Image (cartoon, rainbow, N blue to C red; front, side, top):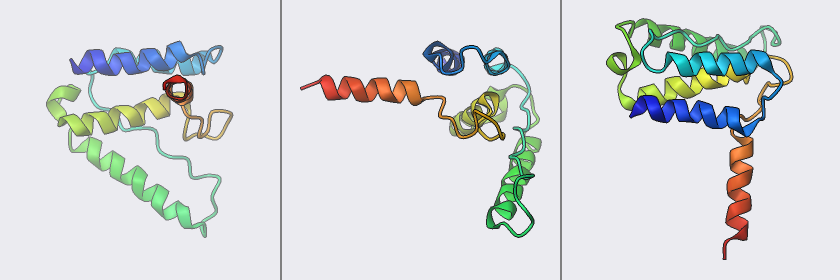
Length: 131
C-alpha cells in the first residue's frame, strides 16, 4: 500500500544512518512517517530566501515556488493524503516533505545533503561488482 511504501522510504533513510546523532532530523523523519497518509496536508517549509539580496536571479523563482506550494496545498485541504491527492502528487508532496525534514533546503550542515546518498553508493557498488 501507499502507506507501507512511503513509510519504508523514511525507514531506509533512517537505517542508512546519514543522520544518526542528529536527533532533530531523526525526530522530523519519524514525525513524517507517522503522518503518512492519514493527516491533513501541510504546506512544506518555505524555501529560505534570506541569503539572497533582492537583485539575485533565484529570489523571484524561490518566492514563486513557495507561493505555488502554499496555493497547491491550500486548494487540497480536504482530509488525508489519499483523498486529497492523485498518486503522482502524493509522491511529489511526500518527497518534498522528506527533504524538509532533513534540512535539505535550510542553511546549515544538511543543506543540499542528499538523504539517499548511502543508498545510491550501495547500488553503484553492487552494480560495479556484477559481471
